Length: 119
Image (cartoon, rainbow, N blue to C red; front, top):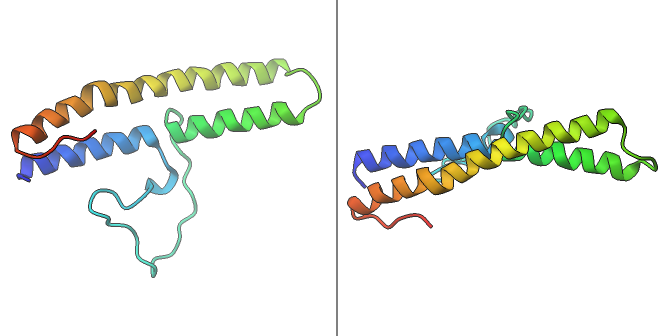
């Protein structure tokens, strides 16, 4: 693919990773440039708060805490759930924008260069 298409793919991958938010950067990225076996394993980084990874962890933690308790959720727990759901709404909007705006724009560039679009 032409350099401009490769740059567009790399830019999309960066935006996708920012929404995904897997600590440690996830996989090797486009082209399989993952870490080798001789590299030390780094401690997991904290995920930014408005990512799919962070929202999943936050909601799962709250669900587990509430399920383990044999009492009604406290005011603090309810506030934490409201905050987590607010972050989930923001994150899902970022995901929708990526799917509905960024991906179609990338596909236009790919198809103009004679490369199949991404589904």
